Amino acid sequence: RKSLLKKIVKKEEGEVWCLSKHLLAASMRLLEVGTKRLGMGKKEEADDFFQKAYNLYSLFWGLNLNLVDTEEIKKIDEGALNKHDQEKKGFLGKLGDLVKRVVNCCIE
Image 1: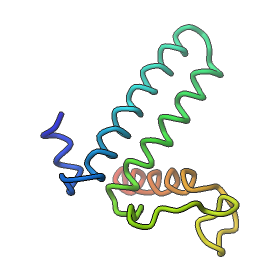
Image 2: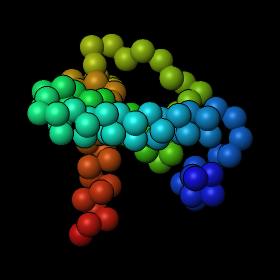
Image 3: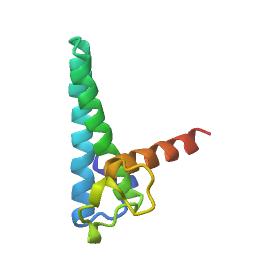
Image 4: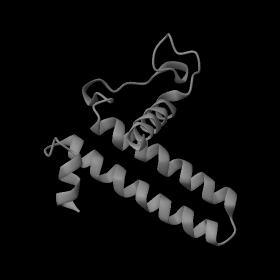
């Protein structure tokens, strides 16, 4: 796992490495639990786990695509990333949209 993570995480020292490792591990675990809940017929619970997994996964990619500046992490008012945002989706919502764009770009 470590050698594979090194291919994605360019900053092997300090907080970025540690955050990345834990974000990815937690998102995968939430996917496992969500899949288990789905198999038990608990779709609503599963959806909640899947959404949380996606939020952590988006944060992982935001951190590793340098979309998140760890030096200046602070609370964002009213769920907006900046004053020009029309739709106030919050930080994780914005990262989720960015991850979707990157994935869609790779598919095309």
